[in-house]
Amino acid sequence: MSPRLFLVTALLAACTTNARAQLAPPSNSPDSAHTYGQVISVSPVFALLGFYTGEVERRVTSNATIGVGGSAFSLGPLGYKSVDGKIRFYPGERALEGLSVGASAGRIWLSADKGGLFSRASQGSGVVVGTDASYTWLSGKRRNLALSLGGGFKRILRYDRYNVSSVHLTYPTARASLGVAF
Image 1 (spheres, rainbow, N blue to C red):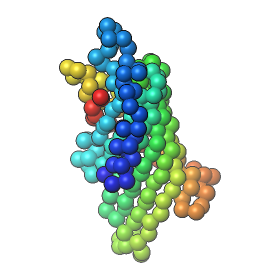
Image 2: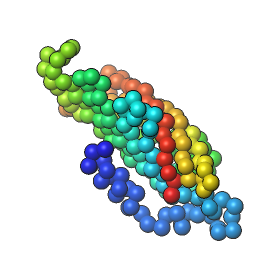
Image 3: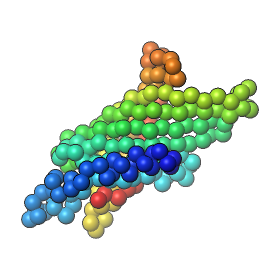
Image 4: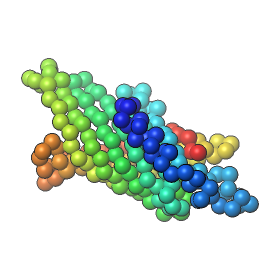
């Protein structure tokens, strides 16, 4: 994880205080022990394949979260990095658990090393927007182990100085993450 992504993640996790106490149900509620304010997750399955992802998601209401995520991989001479701000809606009114639909916006960085198909090294960056749908299960004795599965799409709107939104550069995304709710 890059130092910049780590800093943004740490700031998001620390930016608001006492959110769990403000959003928690009354202490006599059966769900009071299972209401968490945020989830930090990574994808161990994708990491085995050389694709690294991480995400912090924070509850803002009973049915919505905000978050930040990042990913990076290298495939031979090709490189990809991304950082996204995310918002998710949980129609079941249990933010951080169950079905969610979301939107994201962020930045990508693409690179290609010289050699093979490429006569010279190149790199560039772009602005992306995206959508996703996922399902998160909370399990374990304290129900704080988060498993999320889902997918979506991202679309590149600008690449370097060029508006490429009319070219429809869209690619799929996948989510298979394991995390801790607290």
